Every structure is written in structure tokens, then in C-alpha cells.
Image (cartoon, rainbow, N blue to C red):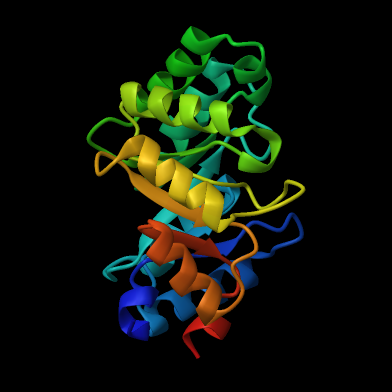
Length: 216
């Protein structure tokens, strides 16, 4: 698999709490230089990233309800709307994991759908399910819920959990959503081999902070 194709599937990610504006501007420059799909940053930096990337082919992606997913739906909706107003065209939202564990499936669906509707026709919604905290049945269930709620992608991990993406989880998620949704593998993808393995397992997008190392 050629590196240009892989680069076009990468969300070049910087979500560390200590990141500065200089770090984010550097991230944006790297993304344009290497042809990455997007930069994935915390909401505070969306406006600056959108300005830096104006006129480029690189999208601005941000995170919603991050990293725990336990915010109220109303908070997630506000956060998503604000991010889009400031220039985000992709939002990666974390599900309410506790609600899923409680089998409150309608709540989980409405939580996702609230964000989907808030940014409809303005942004792609990727749903982070945090696979390391779920059993296989829960992973499949929430993938189906995300599909029903109108999301565009399901995503493995925040990168802040106890474990990141695995081949098994990507394959399971791809099987659950078929070709209806994208699958984003995120967390622990550090090498070219990791990237190829995730894509072969069914990932159509990769979230990584090791993007340059992978491509070089």
C-alpha cells in the first residue's frame, strides 16, 4: 500500500492537554506538507487551525464530550455547534459509556443523534465507542446504534483509555456496520505496519499522533 494513500486516510492528531498554539500550528503545517486527511485537535484550537488551514485540502476535526463521554447530551450539542461555527468539519464524539453499560440504548442513540442533527450538512460525525471498556456484544450493539442514529463513522478509541485500537475490534466493527459507515482506528497506531494492518482489517480512517513516523 503506497504511503500517499495511507497519508490521505490519517487524522493527524494532537490532543495532549499541554499542547500550545505553536504546537497546533506546526501540526497544521505538517498535515498540509504530508497530505493528511485532517488535523484532530481539542475544541479550543479549532478557530486557529481553521485559519491556518484555510485554502488547503486538510480538514479540521475536533472532539466532543472528550475523553469520558459522560457530558450531558445538551452539552455535547452545544460543543459540536460551537466547533462547527469556528471551522470544524468533522467531530469525533464520545458515547456515554455508562449509559450503554446500563443498557439505556435509547439514551445512547438520542445522545449520538443529537450531535448528528446539530451539525447536519455541516460536519461528519465519528462516534468513539472506547472499545477497551466494552465486550464484543456491546461493541456490536453500539455500532448498530450509531448507524441508526445517523453517524458517519464509528471509531475505536479516545487514545486516553487503557488500550487503543486492535485488529479484532476493527474487524468486528467493520462487520457490524458493513459498508454503511466508515471505521476509524485510533490509539496505539505507531508504525507503517500498524497502519496497513488496520486498513486491511477494515479501517477507512486512522487517528494517530505518529503520522509522520508512519509515512517516513
